[in-house]
Image (tube, rainbow, N blue to C red; front, side, top):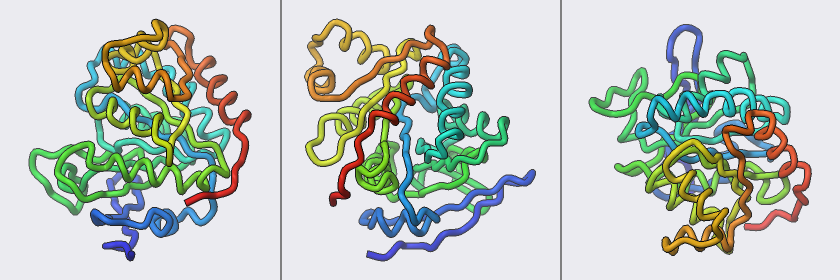
Length: 260
């Protein structure tokens, strides 16, 4: 399977630019990783959760733990970070922090092409791509959530299919995050440890509550807390606790032979 388009550059202005690749419905994640410029595996973190529906209050509460916990850790470990890539919610917090700190870790935004716009691709009533990202993968699909399988497969491949740590982080989130978390924590083929940031609102708080109580009437959430490898961090614990939790997961990772 060949990629629909080769890598190209999005110029955002003011010296900001990013590599991008457009991919079809069917794709080869290994070939995609190489086209993006990643020929060797490395630690990978995907972030799922709040974007356009995240309130200003939740954004403010989350900023410190993202900037001084997650982003600082990614730079120290030279880890790849994957998110939704749009100029809203968590992706804009990650992009802004990366630019503000002048960090160099790869930040890959993955979103459906039909739902975004950027310089050179006009698309009325769509979401802007965040210029703080270093790479974008523009997928097929006409609904947010259509990119979920791409995020799963690319996280798996970029981390060497088990050779390096691959960790998920849930911040806020709604129905799409619920489906993504269930798929990526309970699957027998590809699953990842998940850090849940309690206090960031919506699904993250729902899952945290169920985790502490060890029971919920929501069957998918119950499945997550029974089968998933979950770690909780409260925003009240601060960015250092977030950094420590990531350090624990990365340092306790046991490399495995690559699998398909």
